[in-house]
Length: 367
Ligand code: ATP
Image (cartoon, rainbow, N blue to C red; front, side):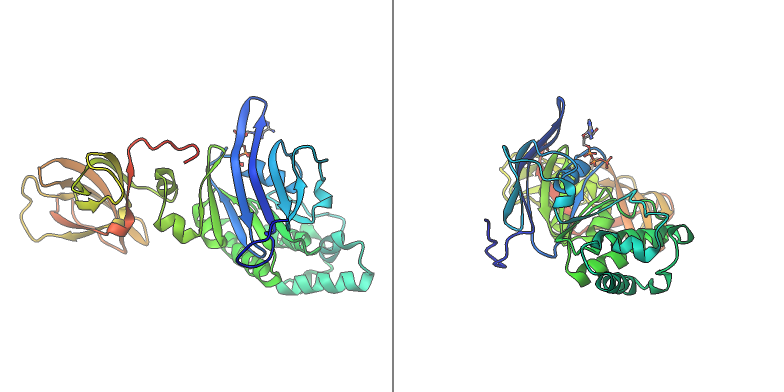
């Protein structure tokens, strides 16, 4: 039994050194992760990085090959132990394609997993969930009369009804259109927090992960590259992949001199990196604050190549010159409508909190 020092409660889920292969193909390696009661953790990463495989192992849909796993401090999967099937795990599953039972009413769908409760108690629990979702009036209707978003909410309620200690959600919002998706995400998070259920959620969408998660595990080629709060991953990324996964960046190279790296838009400190070290400098487009210069467009002056209005932000392509006169092309993103003309001379201010420096050729796997 593993007790968690901070809360005194055992983690809802503790995975240790999990490895999983499909034939010769290693899908997961060295995966360790703990979730506290009520915590929402997102598995985030590009297609094929192993998110679904990891979720399926937790659900019991995939047999554990190596490593161990405990629910509430009790080991349920380890080498030599018999496989515990999904229905014996007290987890709630809501996958992208979780279909409702068409021949059952909304209420019957929700209470489907509550067979062991007396009828009245089952109904009370079902109606309570419907009320929390604001869908009480649909209790006796059939699924085909509901919209996609409503069906998705009912599927979630069905998974939550048996009060599982842990919800497992695989891309639960991906089949919804953008506007509806925002609302259902909101409702889902609200409901999870209200009932105090922990959830492990798979997504490839960084914004969804940032919205939903207490902590994010960012995965890359079968490894967890970094795990932390949305803020930790966004503001203190420990690997170039973590920076680039959250959006477009300006990727430059440089060398550490006197503890700093010169870039075309100013000097950047490089704490902890050795003198002379070749480095990768990643500058978010939001890090560049561009202002128009009221001067003639001289040679070797930073200027606008192109400006595009994207709606809430304007995207600028800039030709910048460093102190030695070296030229580089950068992207900047400015809030609102900012559309300087092509060739317009500009000055560029750098926000150092949006710039990240890494040793060049940092190896991704196992970092
Ligand atoms: P996606 O977002 O596309 O669903 P994912 O991050 O969930 O991707 P997984 O589905 O876990 O990734 O797949 C991880 C790797 O394992 C991929 O390279 C995939 O091709 C491979 N894989 C997954 N399932 C199987 C299987 N049943 N047999 C063989 N290879 C598989």
